[in-house]
Image 1 (cartoon, rainbow, N blue to C red):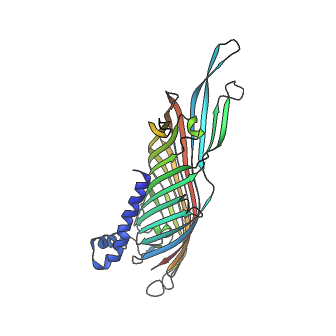
Image 2 (tube, helix red, strand yellow):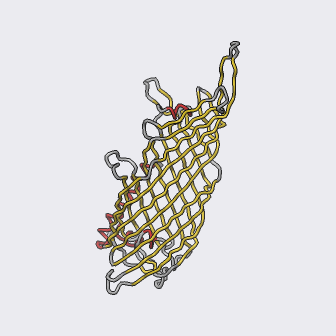
Image 3 (tube, rainbow, N blue to C red):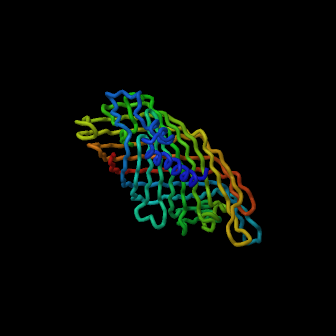
Length: 389
């Protein structure tokens, strides 16, 4: 699925349910479905989890974040020269290219709207609205024992690169480094699934959603699954693309599974003193760590060539199945709730990598001994202020 289409699908799907919330009292089908998936769970222990009735939430957020992807290609390169006697001297030497799309720390603003277990959020880089760059869209569904999060990212940043052939003492030694004139683009669609085995006294959404309230400290073992589909593309006319035989777009698909632990620490809790939210107070902290093993790891390179009209056109596509790798997800957060408001601080770090053999076409020849490795990483730290209705 194309990441942009996936993002539009998220918007369309969630819009139906949020709009349907307005019809809940009229008994519409969508309203009934929305009520069913947002109603309080009967399996929670009421002495450990406080479940308010489903309500609307509107939150504004400010975040610091940084995301990037790096790639290294190692291969052999043939060089030739004519010596003083007119003889052609050939040499086969090791070579590599390294590229990195890694921007600075972005400051973003965002809006999050939710009802019950559902929420939809949008974040945009400060100062990037006119250029329509560095934005993200997310959809969350957090119910008893289970959490689903869909995210779409779109980042643009010049790509730094380094290219080397041979060693410094070799006659065929060549090195070049720099930054692309045109920004590269990274897009990704990520689906996360988490399941907590303790679904009686632990609520994962207590810190990250605020729709459930953790009354006493509790922890749980977690099962996690992740699907990520990403794309990194560069202008085919850049030197970086010519160094790797016209490779200007790379796509990746990964499926990972794993397990870890999550713990909610509650230093303070006070129930509302009357009907509604009046007098309510709560402080909850969470730490979650879920190592994952990537079982499916596919990477594709798309080559571009100059067409007869002088424009670059898509050519050969090479696909690589990567090796089994260990990745991880780490999240931490703290929330303070009072009356019908809450303020939260959250932080997360994701790291996913790939490695395997791929092919590069150069000057009409296909080199199938290219060792490719890459890594995607992302960290986010944010503040959110929410009003409950």
